[in-house]
Length: 326
Length: 309
Image 1 (cartoon, rainbow over the protein chains, first blue to last red):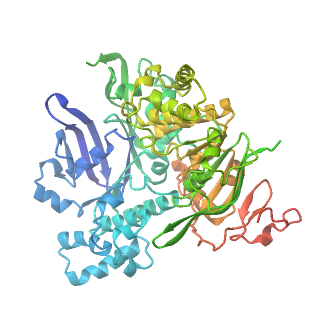
Image 2: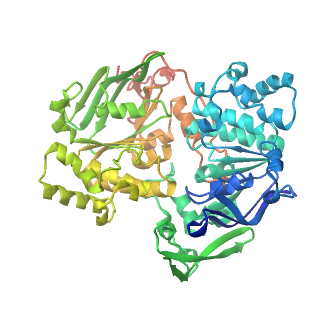
Image 3: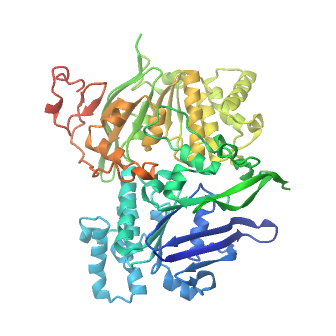
């Protein structure tokens, strides 16, 4: 039995204060076992990035975790001081951001950048850094590490920069890698290389991966467990086979249905609006995605997550409980 | 009657930079048949957008010819070209940047008519309202400005603007890549409906092979500024020949966990050949670059003639 590495329980995250409070994340619970790849999938604004940032306590200054708990390796993250957090970031949990350009220091050779974590966390002597950097560069698929070592980020392509970020992220052998849309800006061939690198590391070190994405294709290829987020809540979760074979929530179905399949014969793409709870056998339930837009005046109260089969959870929305806001 | 709406021969566009001449597109020969959607795929930097913009005469080509509906527009002066401009319109990639934040939606939609001086004020307004309806936006949008709209709605406005002049030919340059997946599907469906309703010919540019598959009748693959493979959609996706096309197709994640890793092939990124490749016909309207394949394999009686040079 693999052990629980990260457990988030009933987490609420809010931005702003007073009248302008915005609940970005409501009542999120998720867990990751060691050796597992967990996908958090949803569209922009669904709260998936905020959730992942809160694990590293990197929320913007006006955001805060209101309640709930995040426990990593049996330590409570929300109670940690900044100093304790610094020992975790990049060391036990590392993050790969979407925007590789913004994540690298443009005035520093990439070879030097990737060993910063080793210098700080592992107190590795300077004399060894270069050799380690070269081996890291080789691990992420560069055939001429000595040449790449001396390059600046602006001299590298998008895919190369993303690989530098991976080298940096795995340098301290973290137990958990959070990859926040690591390949959204990349071409499919490069996307595959980058995701394969992360998957290879995971297997080699028995590490875990939290993958944030909006692409169900990527989820199908790499994830073991899936959480679907919408409007700041988890609306469905289960293992990857369950989610693909028996999705229940209209939003999950919409996300799967809107991917143009290479094998389809021109049948129309479906969207979130083409599915309902009724067809899944839940009468009196309604999911109206537009009620989640900021201007919307109607709001369907979601129920708590219901376990529809072992390990498969769905959040239903009550048609009767409609609130008119403002 | 010529069945080709657009014919381009040996089209090249170079950009001169500090480090030398960059051949963004080089020796592209391509016909677009009336009423079809031709998809262009390729990685970033392969020249897809440059090709679209050169056909639109937004760039001045270095070599080659562009024929639109039997008329050579390659070097036609802008003044003479203007009446024809209404026949080919473009939908841009980023609806956050391609629509003016200072104008109302009504003004954005009517602007092409103000320039082309085709309709009276009332007729323009009527047309704008009817197109708003056609792309699924409420009438109230007419007086609003762009910042009040979401990405998907903005792209609908971009589509409506492109249709204001009743064009024959539309170039859609990555029209959905800035949108969320759930919104993507709606915009693609809209484009498809409009295209069949209005009998448009379309050049659909995207790096997303799934999206291109959904939209296109034929698909052309570009690589480092060259056209390397061209075939009817199903033929290309079922029977890719060029190693780069094969790599592209096998890199697409399949949304089915049961088939994880099923189609994995090594990624092959060939070097750029010095000269634009010749395309040879290998049957089923399937053309492939001759540089990379063993021509012998295809040298049957029928295929002996090289189709293009």
